[in-house]
Image 1 (cartoon, one colour):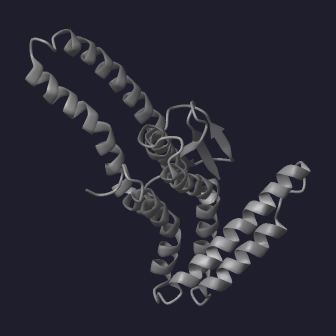
Image 2: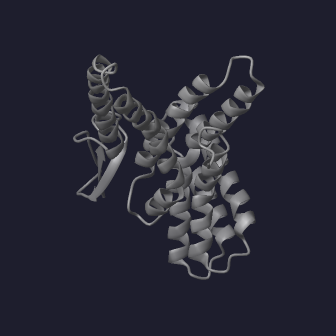
Length: 248
């Protein structure tokens, strides 16, 4: 069985360990929330520094220009760095080196929330480009809604394939769907059950769709890896079209 360590702030799972029985612990802070605290502390420190700098800006105008230029460029560079490393981070999760929920939280805080702020700063309310930018963010948020469940689904597909080396990937995808649907909990509220069924159908549809894209890949491990990384690469490509994240 498993012990699930939940972040005491966001309540998401940030690590698991083998345990006697199933246990949920709400101690500790996940890397994403920890990064958020550090960012908040940094912002407070920068605010204090700005106050000191403004006090002496008439005496040191050239120094002021250098400081402000560095401060203004730093946040966007951090966001671009996170965006460029998105596929690598997803690959680490695929390899068992991290939590999908932690990665989703990190991207939500570090990219999506920031992108929304930058859209408001960049575009006028009547600018048609603002609508296009918001559509990009909406697409990414909708993708996040099922990413965690999709990763769990593909983990089960991998288990099927490891248990039977002769089984086809598409067959494993279909078997996981049928078994998951048959094993739906019966002692839950109707709306919860309907949500679980709808989510299962969504991730099954995505798995089938992305399997069709990479079905020519001969190596089974490489095929399932591409299927898991596909939504992250799509998110990366989508966000890269936003003018404030575009290269150059």
